[in-house]
Every structure is written in C-alpha cells, then in structure tokens.
Image 1 (cartoon, rainbow, N blue to C red):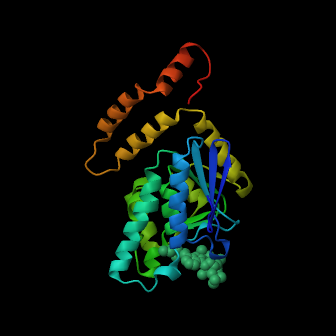
Image 2: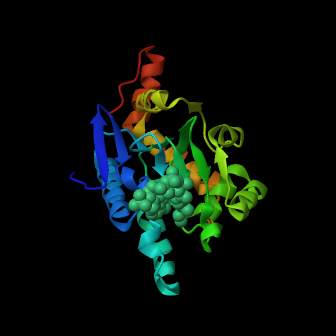
Length: 258
Ligand code: COA
C-alpha cells in the first residue's frame, strides 16, 4: 500500500496507521480520508492482521480536525455531502470494522480528529493530549458523528457543554469522563497500545468480530442489542475458534486460533 498522507507499519499481527501531515497538524483533508479508508479496508481484509492502532505523526497532534481550508467556501449541498461521505467511508466504517481499532491520541484531537478517535473501538492518550469539538467556534457543528458519539461516550450534559463552549479537555479530564481508557507519557503511548493489542491478538478474532457487532448494536436504530447478542453468540458455536478455544481449555493448554 503506497500512500502520501499516512504511514502503515505491520509488526506481526498488529498494524499501525500514522496520519502524516505534521505541518498541518495532521488535519484530515479529502485525500487523507480516502487513504485512511483504503488502509483500514486493506488491513481488515488481511488475515494476518488482528489489531489496528491509529495515531498521528509528530509530538504535537493526533489530528487537529478536518482541513478547514478545503471546506471554508462550501455551500449547503457540498457541506451536507462532506459530512455524509466522510461518515460513510471513514467514521462509520471504522466503528463497524471487524478488526479492533485502538486510537492512540498523541496530542491535539480536535473536531474530525476527536471524531476519528471516537470512531475507534477504544482510546488511550498521552498526557499532553487535548481533546475537543471546536466546530461551533467556526459557525458549524461536528459533522463526522461527533454529536452522537461524544454523547454516547461521556453523556449528554457533558457533550452539550463541550460542543457549546468549543472547549478543549485535558487527557486527565478525558480519562475521568471515560473518553480514554489510559493516560501515559508520550514515550509510553505506542508501547502501551501495542501491549493491549498483543493481548487482544491472542484471543479469537472471529469472536472479537462478533463482540464488536454485538456491542455496536446498542447504538443502531431499530436494532435490539440483546437479540443481536443471542444471534452472534449462536454463530460462534459454529466456528473452528469455538471448538479450539473450548477444547484447549478442557485439555489444559493454550488455544491456537486460526
Ligand atoms: N485545518 C487546516 N489546517 C490546520 C488545521 C485544520 N483543522 N489545524 C491546524 N492547521 C494548520 C495551520 O493552519 C497551520 O498551517 P500554516 O503553518 O500553513 O499556517 C499549521 O497547521 C500549524 O497550526 P497553528 O495554528 O499554527 O498551530 P498552533 O500551535 O498555533 O495551534 C491549534 C494549534 C490546534 C490550537 C490550532 O491549529 C487550531 O485551532 N486548529 C484548528 C482546530 C479546529 O478548529 N479543528 C476543527 C475543524 S472542523
């Protein structure tokens, strides 16, 4: 995979995507969003990859938002299409990916940057990270799922406050609100992401895919999450991983998943 705006590295079964526009604080332009789609799709189809980590290049920023210079002149239709297309090819796409995605937030995660981190299955952050949805200070609202996912993750009242004030929270505040799972120094961030990814990769990818579908069902319109769980639970019983996992337990050995 050859990209201009992102770097993709693979280490055994863990892939790391680094958004690489440091002079623009890794702002998401159209080309970067398209490349991220390609990268996530390709890695999800790669049977050798069990976990994907996403982070930003440099020490200052994860992603400082959507690239404002690209949409500042847009009208109503283009604005609507920008949000619709972005949600479809990147933000919803990542949320629904069967391969677990961990966002390692290494600095500013603003606007589309926080929205991307929130689309990941969970987040960890470095202690210099600053997170917020500053769109109302630009005369617009979050359009890549931010109004929905922020409220789901930290609750409606806090989300309302953050969006209305266009403020930024520190990594520590994000930790207290449950927006990120851990806060460590910048040097420790990717090693921690890799350590967690390593733990995940030892479990059944088939079961993890089913778990993601089941947990996400709670946030889908018109879907009963408990029904989805029953369905996915049953599907697991027909898999080789289930046979291997339960047999390995009974034989008192470690499972060897496909
Ligand atoms: N879109 C486009 N360019 C961006 C950007 C964005 N979202 N965020 C940063 N940049 C660019 C700046 O324009 C600047 O480019 P230049 O050197 O060619 O002028 C470069 O990245 C460095 O940013 P700068 O503002 O000089 O850094 P700073 O340390 O003074 O401030 C921020 C850092 C993150 C506070 C500031 O860049 C910022 O507020 N960015 C926009 C955040 C935002 O509103 N995001 C939501 C968009 S919907």
